[in-house]
Image (cartoon, rainbow, N blue to C red; front, top):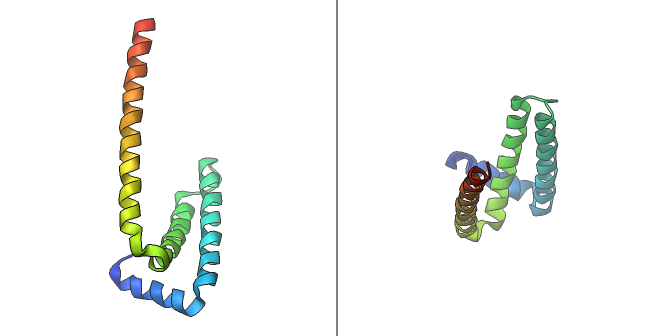
Length: 106
């Protein structure tokens, strides 16, 4: 979970009070709002503060989804982070090889 432990109870309470279906739909809504604000930020139509506010909503909802679906989330996160690490290393090697290739051409 991303939110501090004391807020975990609030996330559990929200999930219990509003229900699984409503919170899944709310998560989808918040993720879409976050995507829109990121595009606006990229296009310089909004500020980082707006991004932070939407990200906070996403984190809260994702923590609720971790409660709902999270029995194996640590393993899934570890697997995804390992995959990212390998991709970065591979891309670094590719970048280095491209630098050497261009050095030979020029």
